[in-house]
Length: 252
Image 1 (cartoon, rainbow, N blue to C red):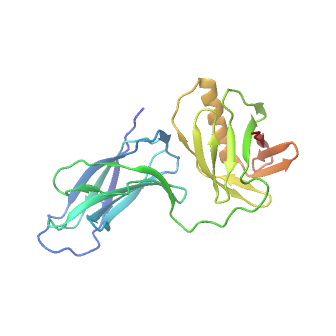
Image 2: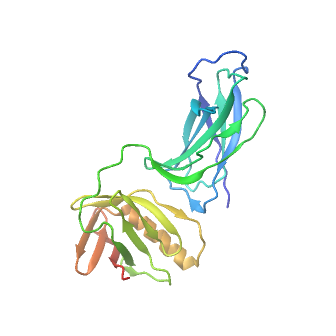
Image 3: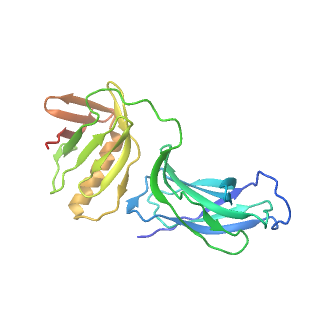
C-alpha cells in the first residue's frame, strides 16, 4: 500500500541574491519517489535542498524523519522565507539516508521554478554513499568474506526452498537473502561482539509463512550482540547470550 508522508520544513536563505526577486514566503510542494522495489529502513530520513543551476550550489534545504513503514511517494513542503532571484535557475536535490549513509539521491537536480505553482516529483536512485569517513576495515575474525547459510532462527529450523543467507564484507557491508527478499545492512565486529544496523530489503511478496520467517530473521539480526564460531558453524547471540541465529558456511 502506498503511504504518503507530509514533511513540513522551514529553510532560511543564507546567501544574498540580486534583484529582481520573488517576494519572501515562496513555497515549493512536491514528492520524492524511487523505482526500486525496496522498503525503507525504520531510521530513514529525507533531505530536500534547493540549488542553483547549473552549478548545483545549495541555496536552502531541510531534513525530516520518515515515519516507520514509510513508503514512496513521500510528499514534502519546502517553505523559503527569504526572497529568490527571478533571473536565476533552480533545481531540487533529494536524499534519503539511513545509518550515516545516503541510500537514495537524484544525481541530476530536478528543475523547478519557485513561486510558479509547480508540484515537482523528484525521482531518486539507489546509490549508497557514506556521509562520514568510512570506518576501518573489520578485523579478521573468520566471519568476513564468507557466504553463510542460515539454519535456524530462535532455535527453530528454517523452511522454504530459497536459502536464507548472510555475507559480510570487510568494508562493513552485509546482506543476502531473507528467504523471499534480498536485504542490505551494515555489520560492526570486534573480537567478541557483532551487531547489525538497520536493514533495507526489496519488497517481493511470498507465502505467509515465508514472510513471517523473514520478518523473524530481520528482527533477530537487529538484536544480535555476540557470536560463537566452531567447526559446527556460526551462532549469533543476543546481549544475554541467548542464541538467535544458527549458520553454516554455504557449499558451492
